[in-house]
Amino acid sequence: MTESLDATDWSILVEVQRDGRIPLTELGRRVSLSASATTERVKRLEAAGIITGYHAAVDLTKVGFAVLAVVRLKYPGSRHQPLHRLLEERSEILECLRTTGDDCYLLKVAATSMAHLEQLIDELAQFGSTTTNLVYSQTLSYRGPQGP
Amino acid sequence: MTESLDATDWSILVEVQRDGRIPLTELGRRVSLSASATTERVKRLEAAGIITGYHAAVDLTKVGFAVLAVVRLKYPGSRHQPLHRLLEERSEILECLRTTGDDCYLLKVAATSMAHLEQLIDELAQFGSTTTNLVYSQTLSYRGPQGP
DNA sequence: CCTGAAAATCGCAGTCG
DNA sequence: CGACTGCGATTTTCAGG
Image (cartoon, rainbow over all chains, first blue to last red; front, side, top):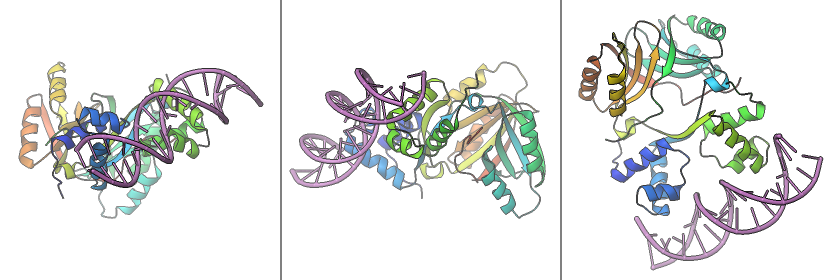
């Protein structure tokens, strides 16, 4: 399943992760390739599922989500469907990782206020015991894999 | 600091978060606006720092990072610079949140193997005690704020 | 992987409600 | 003042070498 990527592929990945809207012609310049060859590479990376998509990043604070929190959820049962439904419905839940350890799930949650967060925690608490930590700051700008 | 966003702005944000490479003309169609009006809106959102950037998402497994882990770091001192330097250098550290609670930092780390992860943990352990959990799966696709 | 053309899109004017 | 129209420049796409 792991595809073989040469140095040019990695350069492309680094560039499109940094700027997802870079024109293919400019991208070609950066990686020393013609526009059409670059297009072909990018298409291949997309078709292989290596590049899974392109997304705009939004400043949570500026759109009204002043509170960011990490919630660890200890989920006793094995029936995960109701939880998955909640994840679908609640767009405030930005990320959900299923992990090893005492807490089965780790969620990243955005809320407009502490009252809003409390309400979200209450919904999650139906499924198991929760541990919540507020996030002061995100000390890294977006990053992804940069090389082999 | 919180800007006022109308329903059209939110529609634009939802669309560009879903597909960051959508042409402005197609985006205009989706939100029932002309291309130029759409462009102006998007430019305004970018200039206001609401849209902070556009990024390609990469499948970690397919590019050789088979191991994803969450590391909580309890950092006793107040001198954070050496840690920040490590974050800069190590592109395997994808995300770093400073949080309330017993553990000061929560990191998301990608590694090519357990041996690689062990090495990363050793570097982090210089700064404080660590708690590591492996990630089985990411049960949500990318998502951001969807409305007020 | 490169070249070169047609088609679509982008960016910037000016204009209308 | 925000949104629509028209035109040149750039980019994307697809043919062929």
